[in-house]
Structures are given as structure tokens and as C-alpha cells.
Amino acid sequence: MTTLAILTAAGSGTRLGRDLPKALVDLAGFPLVLHAARRLAASGVVDSLVVTCPPGLAVEVGELVAHDPQVGLPVRAVEGGSTRQASVAAGLRLAAADVDVVLVHDAARPLAPPGLVRRVVAAVRQGHAAVVPGLPVVDTVKRVVPASPDAVTRAEGPLAERVVETPDRGLLRAVQTPQGFDRAVRVRAPEAGARRADAEHLAATDDAGLVEALGLPVHVVAGDDAAMKITTERDLLVAGLLAEEES
Ligand code: CTP
Ligand code: MG
Image (cartoon, rainbow, N blue to C red):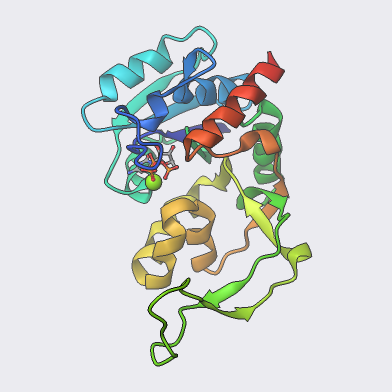
């Protein structure tokens, strides 16, 4: 029984807008990818890592992670693809034959704590083939459609979308990574992505969405605020405070 974590770090970080890939941006003295790798390793339930790296940086990022004494796991690095889904697929291709559980985790969630990693892996090992961490949603969420094209259009003023549904907030979860999978199920999941056009938007950010598209059950375990995703400078500031609190 072996658990492989695919750490996705190949994105460019357009929304952060720095002159280096987001995974290499500094947080409290270390690059995001290293924070994420250290916490995966500290969980004690991950046996090896595959890091998906920005174009041309596989050697550099691979060595950074592999040589970190706090990681201490076998590390392989691979160049990612043009989408997150393509990067995960590249990582999956490096999974050794004995891997039976696959975690997919974003370097963009550098402070996801070891306890969260253990919770996800434990749920997979208990027989749930696809597991995502999720948090209650604090905002009321509306489903909208674009305003009808023949609606009276004004020269000024905000473009209003039309609300078509207000889902029961108590039944919504905002999902995070790491997401955990029975290896055989995750390997089959891209088939669903290829078959169903509507799986494409799920694939961009959420591996479990592909498993859902296969018609297989996905389960949610409790997420953790510390697993927040870094998208903007503001997120980086908040994560900096969390990292300080932690140390
Ligand atoms: N990712 C990846 N390969 C891609 C795109 C994204 O491995 N082709 C990774 C990112 O490195 C990140 C995670 O997927 O850890 C989530 O993606 P996101 O937060 O969107 O990061 P970026 O794509 O780098 O940011 P942006 O969308 O602002 O460019
Ligand atoms: Mg992106």
C-alpha cells in the first residue's frame, strides 16, 4: 500500500502577477511549493512526491524539493501541461506500479496542514474511492444567468445578471486540496473529461469533478481554513499571517 502525492506547481500565477511562477513565490522565507511539500511529508502518510513544474524548471524545482531535509521523501519532477488537468495527467504517468492511493494537491495551498492530509488519506483507505476536503460556505450563493440579450440595455450602470436559484447554503461545501483517490478510479477519470464537455470546467480546478462525471461517488471530509488557496496578493498577505501564527 503506497500513497503518491502529485503536487501541482506548473501554473504561471497570472492573477498574482509576479515575475516568477506562483509556486516559487516566497511565503515566510520559503517558496510556496516547499511549504506544501513539507506539510505533505510531515503527514507521515505520503510515500513519494511527483511535482509538476513550470516549463523549463523541472530540474530546478525538483532539486529544491528533493534536497529539502524536511521533505525527506523520494521526489520526481515533471514539466506540467498547459492546463492543470494536463499537469495532473503528466504526474499520474509517473506513478509506480505499487501506488494504490493518489493525492492531488496544489502548491497554491501551501499551508494545508498534515492533519488534513491524514484525514483525506484515511477516508480513501476506509474505502471511499474519491475524497475531497470541504468547508461550509459562509456567503449566500446565487446561481445566475446572463441578463437576457433583449432586456432593456442602459448606456450606463452595472450589467445585471439574473438570479435563477439560491441553493441551500447548509448543503454547500467549498472544496480544497489535497483530494485523494483510489488510483484506479483517478486513472479512469480523464475518460469522463474527454466524454463530457461539461466536465471541462470541473477539470480546471477540481479532480473530483472528473470522478463525479464518471458517475462514481465522491465524499467530503472536513476541510481546514489553513488550506486556503493563494490567488492574489491579498491571499499571500493572509497566508503570511497564518504562517507566522504557526511558527
Ligand atoms: N497548475 C499546474 N499546471 C497548470 C496550471 C496550474 O500544475 N498548467 C497548478 C498551479 O501551479 C497551482 C494549481 O494548479 O498550484 C492551482 O492553479 P491556480 O491556483 O490557478 O494557479 P496558476 O494557474 O499558477 O494561477 P493563475 O490561474 O492566476 O495563472
Ligand atoms: Mg490557473
